[in-house]
Image 1: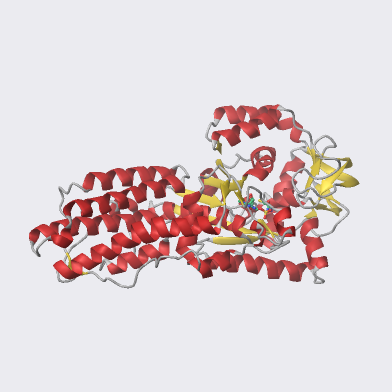
Image 2 (image 1 turned 90 degrees about the vertical axis):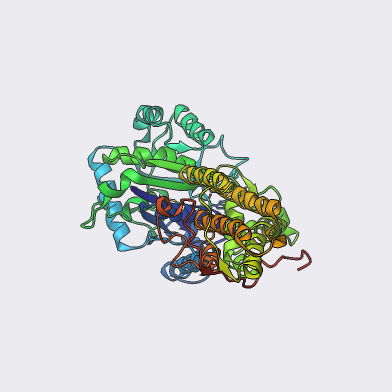
Length: 510
Ligand code: MSP
């Protein structure tokens, strides 16, 4: 048993949560759930990033105070996560007093260590990114990511000596090969460092919406600079409830690919500057796209759907929580970009959920009803299905440990396939009631029990329902995987319920 501290990026509250945010949060949630199942002590952190120009502009644009706006929008994220069954242990808001306290302590440490100095900043700024660009990186004066005009900025700012960490970062990457995964993203961060690091401006005088700089009251910290520290705020950095020593060595950040530079270059350097080890692991994911684009402006202009317009709760209302979670986890492997489409959801739903899992559960319950008087028999220890189940469990557990929910679900669906094939082979529905049919059905029930355990981090609700229908007490994640993930534990002698179809097929026209 170990510890596992998993975080999502904290989301900007300039706008409502969308399915791209849900992609990241559901992945993190499934990992938190897997580690709880594996018996680890887990802390799962998500939250909202509430400072910066972009958020202040959004509030002004809606004619409400910044506080009012952040309260409303942060609440919408919580609602979305509740609708998706997100099991976060802590929800941080960067406007909370605990965050101000930790940020000021952390940055005072960097200041005292001599890595912060004052200078004039001049550069091009994108408010949507909350980031600076050089003239070369801009596209005709526009942001290369958002296509919006960059704004010329000139201010007296405090700077962080990022350049002083070039060698230490390169050494750190060399000594910690798994620091950033997948490897392609690690290489990207490494090349960025190798290309040379410039000092970064970390404070603002032009806005007051931010965490005040403790040693200079005219300045607030630049939003990214306070935001990254949220991961330490949540474990009490610099406060009375400090648990950094317990959790930081077990920390994992799940982030999208466009914020690699902040998490894999700035953040480890900031930690080093404050005299702290960097986060232990950063897992990078790609983007969900619609029609090959993240923000499809043309589609919006044509009245089409933008990914950022799709609210997670609309999807869960339409398809159910677990099918959406399954789709997000199964369709796109972490690290690659993926195409999001309603057709894709329906396809996964009908094939993997209705045909494979749903049918398996329904047909087993039906045969137990007709041939075993509705009482589930116990499995055989020497069943020919047992090796497939053991292989699937080993593969899925390994994939969950490697931050690969997609592969874990693939292995789990492999066991569903083997069980369906096992039933086809023995055709228990053609057998006479008696020991032979009971033997086959006991094995099938045991395989379904194991599927419910293995899939529970992805689809907690449905797996609980399957558990109940099998006549089992408690929950699929009620015991650790080491205890529950063993062939042969289905007790037998319990009533199996047929119930309504778990996943009624979707007809496309609907
Ligand atoms: N506030 C910063 C993060 C600070 S963390 C210290 C931020 N916020 S964000 O709301 O713009 O994005 C948060 C996360 O959502 C990013 O990891 C980003 O990759 C992810 N996604 C936003 N759109 C996405 C898709 N279309 N697809 C997948 N993830 C996407 O950046």
